[in-house]
Length: 619
Image (cartoon, rainbow, N blue to C red):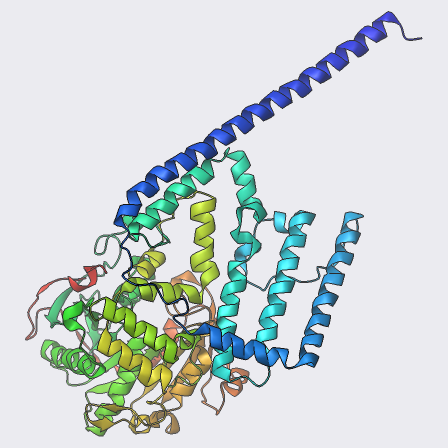
């Protein structure tokens, strides 16, 4: 029998255990009470905040079109074709069940302490699953792999549908991916381990702060959710972004011309004139000083001029592609000659600015106008046969929707619409990651200059934008030799100036295959005067990659074979930035060195300091 001492010790131990359990229980109740109060506060606060927003919401005069992009008939077409091919469905179902069988077999083995290969892995670069719980925790790992199996199955089913028009398949595939991305378990609080962990650790404070962020964005968009991507108060144009020293030396109603101040005692004779896209603002080329392409070019001894496009209002709604050629490119060429005395310039066209430059070159070739000595294209398309995902918005229904929205906005496409469209092209990075961070985790958007630029959107004049979408995306008229500009039928085969073409391997807006097709259009190609180069990364980082960063890579090939696949096979990979390769090419087209020119020394007088007024106009 146990001694009295042993019984007493046992009783005390039990008492201590019960006390510990009671203490843990009390702590749990206290934590739950705090958690509940936090949720109640979040709910109450959200009602107060929403009450502030609701009066600002503008009621729609009419019931919105439930299917403005005409998705229903296209989805019906594709899935009708799928349903009419039982063999295809059977193979897809077998593949899906094999995947799930492997998943459950692996889960059972893992629960028994064994290590097995995953049934499916996320695609490289898919950052949705970066939290370690998605791999360490069996339950979350099952959720992740189940989602990937189902999402990939549905996307593959659409991608491989037989008997479907390629453009219809591309459109349905794009929106199917949008749907499967939206339903990812990462986007829901109860199936996101990071959100659950943060909610428990912060006692629901993240949800309260997230609701404040949500209502703030709702208020910022006047009733339409305008997701914050960055801290917009952290940057000011001309103070800590777009700071390359220079002057505005010319302006008209659609653009200002900037001339940047030299940093070297001598500069190349031939000026460099840059035409950025008017869909975004020019300072993507002049973010922080260490990232600035403009500063890098000036330091290399180039006299750099740049067009800063106006952010148009309804007074410019009737401006056309020809207007942007005459009052943009031609006006800039004339102004540069007055500023420097040089009759020939080297030019750069970025994205849609490059498309305008390409068409203008064909017009100038027809008119025997030789003021452009060479052209460089950054991520610019001239042949739109294999254009990127923006094509899915450019069918008949999509263009009708765009035109309607411009009519409702007095003849311009508001900047928010353009931003929404571009964000959809990378929804996981630019939409859902911010939804999780801002609203579920309750984080404040970080200060990031690139995202500040991305959010600083511009408007589009109706006539110009519709002409661009119809002529290039819808008809591919320029590449087919069917485009008429200024009364001239354009033939890119007449363009014979030296050309440097930059593309990016992961560009989702101007895919390298599309850019390569454009490079072959020019007469310069047949004469061996087109240099095609492909960089790593995408539409922005593939272009804005200063050598000092030592990031990514680029590929070169001295030949321009018939297909881009042949070009890639014969290409040489180089580490780091492509800028030095371009400089090596460009300096041979730039003449001898002369004493550096300063803004205002020529016939054009200084109007104001760079970056100028136009770039500061908000949409």
